[in-house]
Length: 586
Image 1: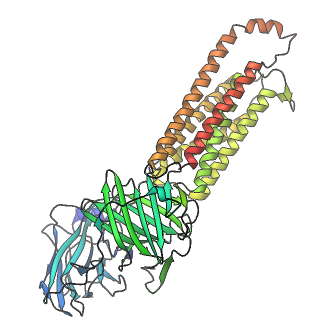
Image 2 (image 1 turned 180 degrees about the horizontal axis):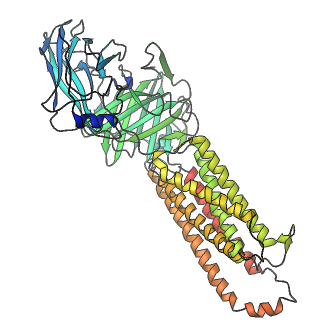
Image 3 (image 1 turned 30 degrees about the vertical axis):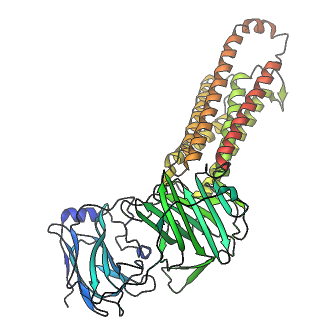
């Protein structure tokens, strides 16, 4: 049999390829069951495909060799491809047959789900117009089969789920598998902590008012889960030994119109791979209704996972042990059951869940290190930076002639609060860099503004240390510059906080609450500063009288000034408390 491998030197095609095709060296092994290129959110084309699967015969007997042709219409080429065969009915996940011959210049084989050479994929980004393969049917009658292929023309243009049927020579119905029904879960939150265990989010919700919820009930060696989320395509539960994504078991439910699935999966690292179900899950129900995605299923306590890279290494997740529970939600690619990356952070329980006891567990979205980073920044800018600015501008005379360590009380207070603001800001900055190491695309603006805040803060502190003397000619210039950069810093900090709470990955309830808190803080700061400016202007009319008396009297801080400073401090502390709730309540 001649194995044909044709290429054409299309200039435009090569130009696209040279810019870089995702996985130009070949698709990852993790795509055995999905065969869907996740090229920065690109969707599969829905129109007629210019690429076809052709067979030399469309009826098989066990052990037959079938010639399979992958072809492109005139003037078209494909740079990437994946192809496999599976049952038309019954267990459609299990991959059938073996590819015994194929052009190794373009293709490589994969051993999926314990099989041998049962899936082919490209190994480079060279454009081709025709590929000839030989596929050997399984040695037993598996019923009617389907060849499914994905063709990639360029990075953002591809066609998935291109199918051609191969009928069995002797009709045979494979054993049925457990099906997913379209039905809403029957959630009873009154039983939380009594006859069922519950995971609820946000912190203040009680059940039906939650954005995300999960319940579990254990009976012998089985656990029944029910969950829901305000999702558009899927909701997924994960079981993890820690609060970070990686080396986790997942069970996911998808619903798009009448297309419903429940999928077994694994998080090797910061992504999910679909696992062979093996009939390990039953009583499966899911539906999408009124913006909510509902799902319920029963699983054995002990389930196994396969490692695609090390097929002989089996990992077990046993719910007799305690695990952190994660819940994620997001979209599916149009017309498929393939899950996309979640847009909002998944929630994770604050402690491990014991599935043999029924308690109410609370969950949060942000990792603890990130929450501490946010708290330190709010402490620096809501409290200490504001106090430093208020004291410097409005309390030089109000603090009187009192001295501390040889310097005026107002100056020492200003310096202390400014240094505290710098210290907390620097600690927060270092903490997040230790945690993240690099910018994230989901919060790149927040990161750049945060760096601007840190650099400007450092410059302000350094300038304060080398300020010119009171009689220096450039002292007025320094004073105005110090004031200008101080106000700029306050504005930058507010913008940075707004960007933080409005990052793409922040869950919607937290995004809304955080935005309200930052808006309230900004409004209160403006009101206080306008009040102080009006008060300062009114006091100017008395300055001449004060100047006549200053030679014989030492200025004294008034009770009103002290009470106002206390009131301002209490206001900012209340704003900080609201900020802490915005961080830790979600």
